[in-house]
Length: 367
Image (cartoon, rainbow, N blue to C red):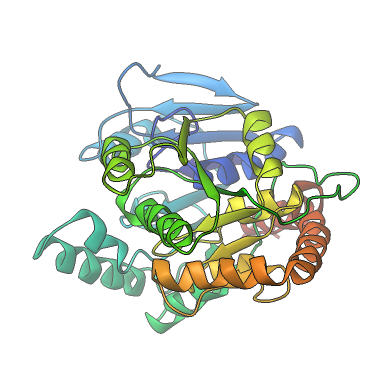
């Protein structure tokens, strides 16, 4: 069968993140099963118009404003596809109205407040409105997501069919849970795109609060993005130059090593589709302390695999960290629970069921 993914970024895009890694996981599995798999995305500087990535043919054309038209032009020249996957990220591809074949919508999160992180009024309000309107227009299209929070948001907008398919990770859990006493200096880590909606500055302010309370702690920030320079400046303003380390983007082994060394992962995003790096950290024996937002409250089970703060504020997050500093035995229980749970989210467990659903969608109308 022939599958097409429409996505606003591809794995090689400098702005690609967890969403693209997850998408590639599904598509490479379909390709390995012998299906023809295509990924259409906008061009970016230095990108080839076509290339093959892990068995998936990536096709690039147009920019953010013209890619939908370019996708239609390219699509009309292709043999029939069995399934088109219209991946939303704030804006859809409107594929159900032009692809003339089986189509599903794929979404990681409903952006909601994330519009406020990138745009001022009235553009943020317009973004929120069009997102809700789009979901209503797509109400008869089958949706696929990983988060019950996202599912609930879609259903509130009138979407009739939402299938939950959990994310998987390539990260293989440690074969044995090695000893890692919770002692100072406390090692904290953030793994994230450095973008406004990720609120990495909140993690830095959490570190400052801990230091001011007498905790010897440091923070490693793994990732790159448009606000990196602002975060460097903030580290200086908070007098944290010697305590905050910016690594930039790391290879998968390098990222795993950073997660393995840390005592805790901090996650302060506005909302997530799931929180992929929470599970990756768990696989390395590192629990997470996260904000109480969509996605993160599912990837982290409060007081079972990590802690969820009461409020979306650095002081609330710092209180959670202090709770564990004062209860090192609880920390070890969280570590073991998180490590065991992470094993159930490896791709080997997730992909067969997920791709069986996609194949079933591709066969609709044939059987």
